[in-house]
Image 1 (spheres, rainbow, N blue to C red):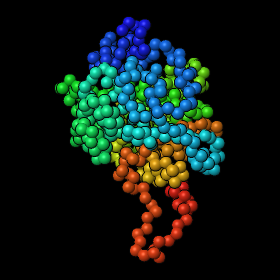
Image 2: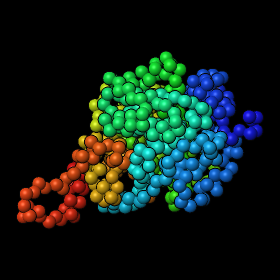
Image 3: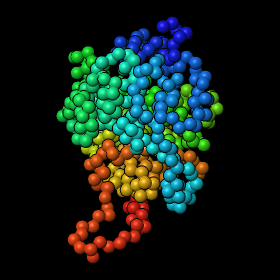
Image 4: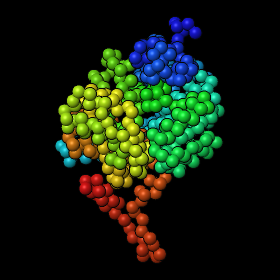
Length: 442
Ligand SMILES: Cc1ncc(COP(=O)(O)O)c(C=O)c1O
Ligand SMILES: [Zn+2]
């Protein structure tokens, strides 16, 4: 294809070489053919000339992520592999606004970007699953390999199965049995590795080299970043005001990278003043980035601070989704957070049960454990004085409870064992609400 006919291309972030398509990117082991760098941005030849039309289109459509086809790196619509991912609501959570007002005297808006009901996997990894299956199909890749803490493996398995592409998944020893089954039920291969996520990644890399199988790239994967950037398009399309604070549970960091990409693409077009402040929250059981950040902050962010971080082996956590103990993206993520005026912190995962119960009571939404860490990040931000009067805060509810049945089974609190009619006493549901808030305030 001659250059003037390109819809999109990749551009190396180091030497700026332009790479025509993902097919060529894959042929070069997902590196720049010029300098070997593994980071590239996707650029669109028309420089987003028509983005306004997409952001103004308030219609409900079943195309989800793919309503933005013009600004996603796929040449033919025939290759789209989709099941309505990204068709998710952005709700106002007034119960958290009231809490901020009554307890901290702050008037803020709180929005929940609700990926809990994404069709394929019930997580925001559906976006990446659809994007990657479509690009691999267009590039005629028959087989793929990936290491995953769980959610991304389930998404890849579902979407690659729909595309007729084979998948080898490498799961760490502690990932959930339910997720293992969700991957395997499509007839895709699971290797459960006796080791942590980093060990699973290393084995996947050796396996892919040995058999010449394309390996899912790390958190800098431009396909994943392009999928995640559409979250910002959805904020602009659906919300009256652009959030100035973004809160997410943090593991590898693809979410914030996608959001930063969208903000960079759209900057100067007058849609928002600046990128939101990133408040990224890790589980306290695996918090290398939060620990590195706390250390850097304590020392006044000295020269080279972003290059210093701990590596945690075999983190023991009930939220394996968030168990990235080797935080290779920290140098980039931490700079982004710093530039945004935000924070990387952690939240005790033992509190996630109380948070999930409260959210279910107050909003009738059942969030998953990683999403509960994000809501915990919001509460901690209030306590630590990170939120300001007038802020418009968006919390990424990255997953629903459906993907974590073990966690769900721990959520009941209203059961009484009964033998007789007399045992069946009436309840005062309001008392539950009080108890749930008391649990949080403790
Ligand atoms: C629900 C949920 N929240 C947050 C994360 C962390 O995502 P990120 O790669 O942006 O750190 C993940 C995946 O790891 C996830 O599945
Ligand atoms: Zn290059």
